[in-house]
Amino acid sequence: MLRSASHLKGTSLAATDGEIGSVQDLYFDDLTWTVRYLIVDTGAWLPGRQVLISPRSVRSSTDENSVPVALSKEQVKDSPSIDTDKPVDRQYEAQYSQYYGYPYYWGGPYRWGATPYPSGGLLTEARAVSAALPSGASRLRTARNVMGYYIEAVDGDIGHVEDFLVDDHEWAIRYMIVDTRNWWPGKKVIISPDGSTA
Image (tube, rainbow, N blue to C red; front, side, top):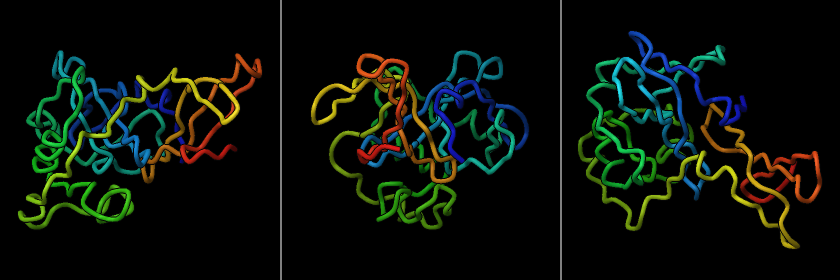
């Protein structure tokens, strides 16, 4: 199902033993256009703390107002802390993956490393975690920071990013919703990250 990033904001996350907070933003990989983490405000449960939740833990649901995750509140509470005002680097991602037992998403040929979908398995061998980290900076951006970016066509400005449509099975950004008000007033178009329009 396609869900807009702005609709996901404020959606509650349900752990196996209770609510853990609400989605505040998304970190996505700007190379593969894949949502890597949900940024979750833990609210009154862990005041003043935000945590990252990987789509690897998300379970399917028909409730659009809640996102169930296969994690306990204790797991989330003890997870590596994050400062969402700073970029997420590969060392943090490696620590995060080791804590939860997730394989690295950069360690294979598919969108999620060794599997095409985020629910494809946990680490089974410790040596899988010790794979070399790729060189270079992390390619993660928040959806909120990219909203408002201008989109340039080959013949000029067509508008700005207003929202994203996310496939909540693969957690891939399928489309950007572009507001064309400066060029084509009152219209919005959707553009695939690969450049095609729909």
